[in-house]
Image 1 (cartoon, rainbow, N blue to C red):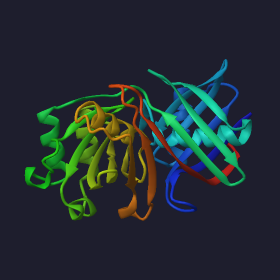
Image 2 (cartoon, rainbow, N blue to C red; image 1 turned 90 degrees about the vertical axis):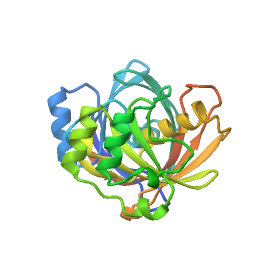
Image 3 (cartoon, helix red, strand yellow; image 1 turned 180 degrees about the vertical axis):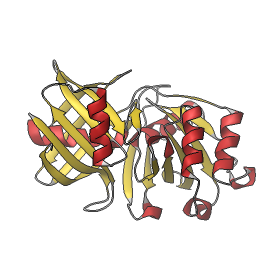
Length: 281
């Protein structure tokens, strides 16, 4: 069995979401083949899944390299597994973590929820300043709630909190400079965040480290950000909604449930729409 599926995770009904490839095979293939397939698919990430006992061994590749964890590709993978094997919880063995995704399929209605790896964060003034300079921002563009922070939930993401929605809408940066900066500091993405209200955040996410200017939905960054809100700010929020991709015409909706134990993995869920389902070429 070899199949390549294309789906959009965290879709807004029948539109939006972040396209992901899902490659299923009875046997693992080597890294070179995975990288070539991911580059050919052309989406920000493709998940490669192979049976591993009662679980699935999963790796994620962007067009320009492997990433340790990808939320939207995990959600897409869950939807594919639910369509093929039924509504269930599926255990996933990653390079550095073991997580699970719970998914359901009812005709064209697909939905999945992942539980992220554990969360942590750190403040790094050098990374923060370079991030601001990359997007031509300064300290006056930030909220006073918290400074830029490197948040982690399976991968590192720089979170930059903006006080003005228009600064979010006007996001721009040099892709090559972003790639160099993010790879130097082992950042998977940089998320610019604007708080709409107490439970809704609007986000744009730069993924230059993978050769992609912007991601329309980023489950791993959502989990890392939500974990930071709990672990550092002790905000008491148990649920937030993240709206992403609006400014690039790919509105996506990420629902985030936040367990209240420090460091515990975060639950990120959303709808999935099928772009194409079929055998690998």
